[in-house]
Image (cartoon, rainbow, N blue to C red; front, side, top):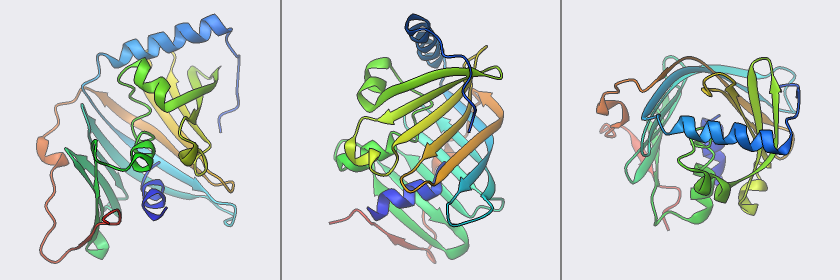
Length: 225
């Protein structure tokens, strides 16, 4: 699915340590979910590393992310921006400023299920509640290493697993702040984002999530029938 591949391109190996007992794992997850209740917005810089079997060296790009409840997000790759994934309200733009091109995708209840399942990968690090999280992911393992918890997940959607069989989240053991995400894709590719300079609940200008295509931009709708 072309649209799903676009999302993976725009987005985003820790050695496992001590594996907690089943009861301890549940306690850690409970604390992680509880910590999310205080989250209203979040911003951070990140370094994205893409590892491809066909390349001897990984592709490394810096970027910035802003997120605000309930569904606003802005992922920018590169400085100046090479690509931007901008979600606001009922739509998402994938913008390529240097090419003066953008793609428009629908969000919300009318969005095709496969696309909604792919979009859940974007917000996996900020679960709203355990019930919704359990409907979207299966926990494979929870390990501790270097002051962080590493949570390995499998998407509940079979279609999503065909592209991304595993997603890994790393968050700190003291305040449960998101430290990194990593997607393991079919074929051996990996996409890892490591976050720095994170700020919880910053005051974000609504204009961060607003964008209107300039007159000289070409906009396409890959999911349009």
